[in-house]
Amino acid sequence: MSTVAAWPNRAETWLDERGKGAWMAAMIVGFIFFWPVGLALLAYMIWSKRMFSGTCAKRNKMNRPRHYHGAFKTSGNLAFDSYKADTLRRLEEEQGNFENFLQRLRESKDKAEFDQFMDERATKARQTNPADEAETTA
Image (cartoon, rainbow, N blue to C red; front, side, top):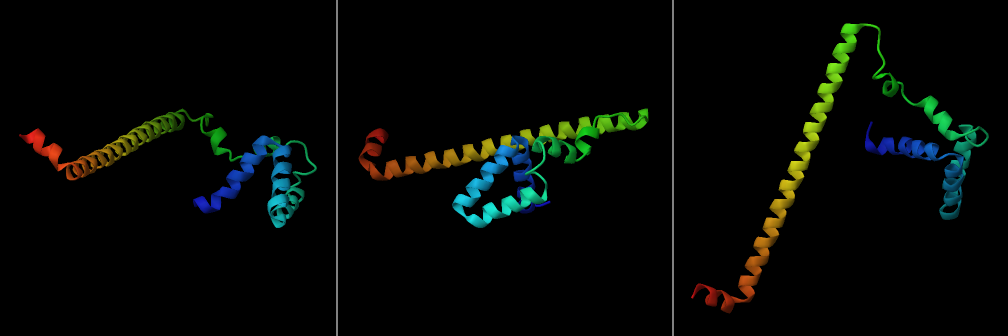
């Protein structure tokens, strides 16, 4: 799913985690700044039964994908469970290695940019003060 298509789901989850008050606040802010947004939020709250139900957090827990909860449950097959545990461990290790690589890449890029900045600054300083350079070489 692309980032553009995922933001409404993330916003809905974020509001659900904070409860009905967050939905009400979002609706009121929507009415204040641009009334069709507030009206759309009100219609969505009524349509999804968020307006008249208990807490939004309970509903969100029930609608979450099961792969998060079932990732560490046993299947009853020891060979498969062992394979799954090894695969998850390997993937976590690869993810950590990749994140470390990205961090090193960012640091090296930052260092290269800083070194370039310092070189440009030194060049500019030499160009503006040729007398100082003549004194240091003499």
